[in-house]
Image (cartoon, rainbow, N blue to C red; front, top):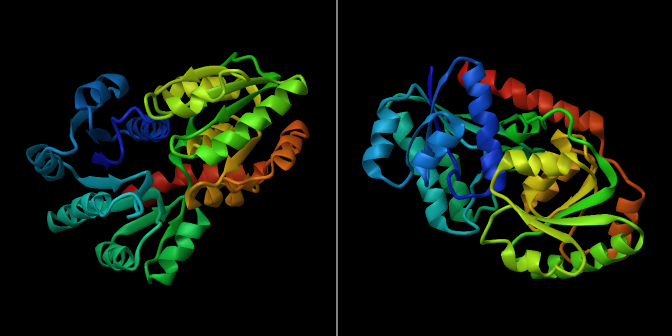
Length: 323
């Protein structure tokens, strides 16, 4: 089957690239022919070994839709209008066009929202008759309230595996800040100081070069700084430590993928949704520094059985979407 992938791809965002890496790997392993809508199609094509088209080029979009059998919208948190109503318009327009062309369409392992009242109405109308798979129970509950039936899946990045032989230093901790979350960064710097005083080695890891740099700089006196847009590199780093604290959602998701205890900073409902479904500690951006530090030092673990259930649903969701 020819499958067209639509998401926030080609923007050097490690989290979204982790989703794309998993999607392309899984779909190719299942024998599907993959095309990706990307901000940087040449780079995406060379990195993932797939055909790629410009996500904002009307001719590319039309040719991509005409030439596909199925559109997978996602993963990620695409259907929201918190950042801009144009974002929601873009993804809903692709869904509508694919439906008009008679293509199979699936909302694939997304988080839904936040949505305004008008956004909720637009999503409800667009998803009528669309196979919808969400990655957390809060998104499922939101769609249920809107009258949209959704199946519970799991983030595709949960299916990623670190390369074998990566040594783990249980004494090391990754902290993954996020641009624009200054309050969380200020408190995380204090956490880093206390972890260092307790004998821990702290790595501050940026997930989007250029965007997270200002937040990373805050850790220069308390941590080793590293930034990457390569999901395989981020996965390797997180697999090599004893704990990960993430404002970035995919820092905690990659922690779950490689069985590294993780702690989420809920700047957005999608972080809260994932951590709660995984039975993991999650705190708001104005969290108690002592409480989070103690949890990391105690190596408070998530519910690994719940994480494994997420991984199982994620793998099964490919069949649900394309059967």
